[in-house]
Length: 192
Image (cartoon, rainbow, N blue to C red):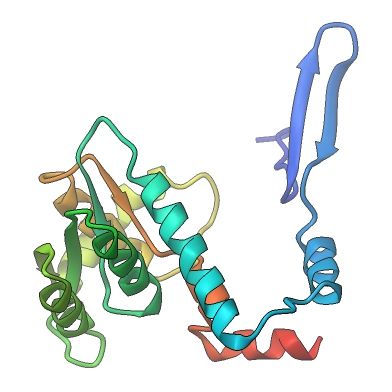
């Protein structure tokens, strides 16, 4: 739409009748990143591991406060496996949900099943076909406010529909790859 603009990352808009619209920045990720690099952690490697573990456990437990049933997506990767481990380690009985593919090259359900079995979660999975993915494209477009190029959005959409049969809210590990170095591209950041 003409005259419609998107806020930049870390910005908020406040409006009142006297001063109108005021835009302000509450977060600057680049600035924060460089400030954190200057104040590096001073403890040992073991202390750093414990601090990360403590923070992860704390945040995951906080996210479980709800008056509706909660589960978590489980791919078997670093991010979702750590979330499930953090919850189970605190005695939280959790339901896990995975999406699988019939193509063995892209199927991660096997890893999710190993984690679910090891941690004794109430695990459910759905297997989807290429046709199901293509059929959902038209439905997915209306769910996003802007172009979204992550190919995982289609299986995540289908997994969410499946998960809704069992729980109202599901935790996901999105963003943890950036913290735990799940992709090679993040190794380049330290060279900046």
